[in-house]
Length: 223
Image 1 (cartoon, rainbow, N blue to C red):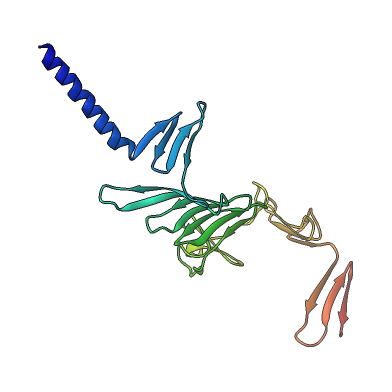
Image 2: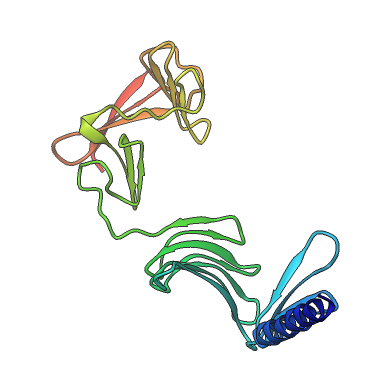
């Protein structure tokens, strides 16, 4: 019985040493560092886990399924200048350039970028053709923005206002719409009629010259 127990113990120790030897060829641990060949993981005994690659300028974590199909990558490159996500084709989907910009991409082409100065850039080659989901920005299939145009879908009304009352102001004094009174003021912030002009009115005539109005006087200017 003792001999059998001794043989079982020897066999178990041999198996452990043999299996450990195979495992250590791929995975070893030393002073808290888990070594994966020439790469390693380690923790700082507080809140962080670190992954160190064996490349001089970039590191990557690749996600793939059992059929070896790559689904995406967590990628850092340029000696820490770039960080983000890549899709299954190896193209950037999300890229952050350190201290410069954050960009959302499709097939490595910028689609939405936030710059370090706070500017938001929307990149689009789709014109606002008159239907939903066109233009550089489409909001809820209702409003489209394309370069210098703001367009509503299905000929809907476009409302511009600077407060909840529906009033509209252009630079504070040049043009005022008083929505509650249905009045328009030009160079007048409190129009007293449907149209209130505080300086002068000029009406072009079919021929040369124009009609003008200042105060109580109407005049013709042939120049």
